[in-house]
Image (cartoon, rainbow, N blue to C red; front, top):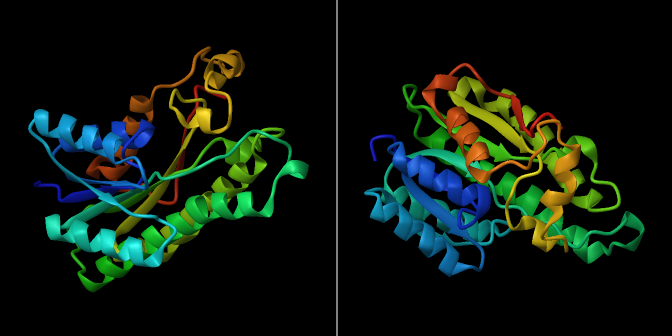
Length: 249
């Protein structure tokens, strides 16, 4: 764990799981956060252990202050906290805005916006108490191309939540730059993960792929590679930046 501990929210599936495996392979100890699917999280932990890496999982609702604080305590019990990947996110059934309920909006915003802010706040608070100028401390927020495309007729609430993540990324990056903490975001496009099933269309990638200039959906590992570059010292002069991983869409 020469690179320290990397905390990945929503790390049991999709982009989060791919990032966890890549991070462990590159020398991080990994803490995988999950909300309910312990089996998926434990499978990722087992996969990492089988390859000689170090990983643990921790159940926490990122929308809860108490859960987030406990999760960061656990991360620090593993070692020095080096980075945070705010990957946890939810979307709901595809529909136009006029049919959406306020309860739905609250669920989406609580995880995607409040959860991202809570985790970022907790990381910054702890780093502020333990300044180490030579550390490569970084936060990568997983946003979405939906933030700029709007997801009309599908989930504009999700798109709006990711627009908030983009604003947070830029503002927080400027706020903590003097602390030596970098904050960036990736904006995945049409990626082959099971999040599309949550929207009611498991095969959405196949339908939308024809609108992607590269002609295909992306792989979770392709997003993970970008996240890990932003976490690395190779991107040491990069902060407040967005990288679109979208095949040109």
